[in-house]
Length: 302
Image (cartoon, rainbow, N blue to C red):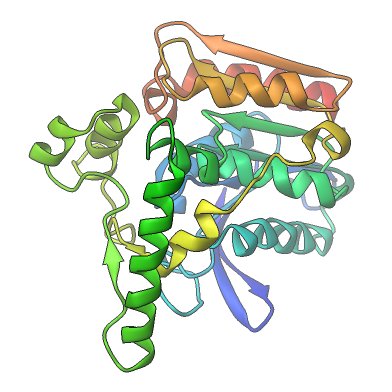
């Protein structure tokens, strides 16, 4: 079963899809999972794919568009605000809390790519999340800083100066400035130095997963918050829930999951490498292999 839903979020509404198991019975109670999409993504892409697979295994799930993005409300559009993204997750749990067929003691969260870091951060402060899983999980702030090289801060400072000038112009009536989230053309992708960026073009900007509500736009005023964001600052103290981290064996972002695995306070944690998979292939092509691990993990811990 799939059902479009609207989730209230402090004056705006988030657009989501609720997935339920086959032979769903509203008189029973089910474990539930919030599925959080990558930066720049929407619910119709990998988040919806995983939400559907987990529903087939017996879970009630929600995939949704982040605030300011996709079909969800929130102005300005195309804002990537880590604090807002983390708060979105708690609003999803609020929604689950009001469904009589969801067991409030068996709610979990799965995050994909940047959604993984957001889930890890949310789980540190919202203990209604009883188990945590990532697929190709990254801390978006860490990844953005790494994109500027070994000594990123001179470039970060220059970027912040440019953002400040742009925001002054915006305050004085100029149009809001947007950038591309991933390479927008095959030529840009070929010139990208990192494999995950080249892969992202193939996923987001070709018929493979292109979606009209994910136009590859990132509001430039997002940069200060993203560049200063640290999803993992207190994982060694506050990330205590059971934790599953799934990465591709050939992923060039796996170092972040490895760090999370080493640092997390969770007494029960596992890092799984999917043979032959890359960061982006786990979004769809290798999703079945990852989903098998997720089903076992969630059934054991919810």
